Length: 144
Image (tube, helix red, strand yellow):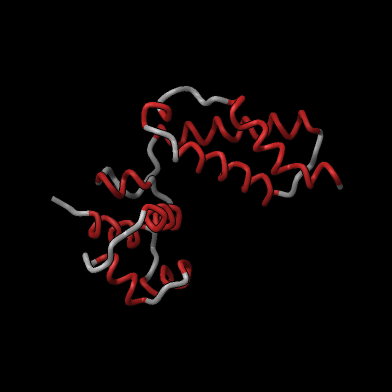
């Protein structure tokens, strides 16, 4: 059975990244990346999310070994819902935020969703919950 550390190495290789590139992206040494891939490093949840983001995979795939080279259909569908919500808020606020601000809004909502229990994650997206957050992110764009 494949372990987490082997899945991390496999996902890195599938993403076409070297140990050096991963170390640079994470701001750590090459030795520390090697340790992450060889059971010598204890991984925090934050580090797992950073690695998953860097490799373009779902963190649960790294944890559970489900085809660590693609995002799951469920996550892709949720991202689509979040993008639609952000677009709706942009239209309601009548703002033209920079693409980086839109990206930040989508990522923040996605991170908030990832912090929810699996039971909540499997429910439809609660758009009311995130509208205020998105408006706060876009407030500087509206004030300009």
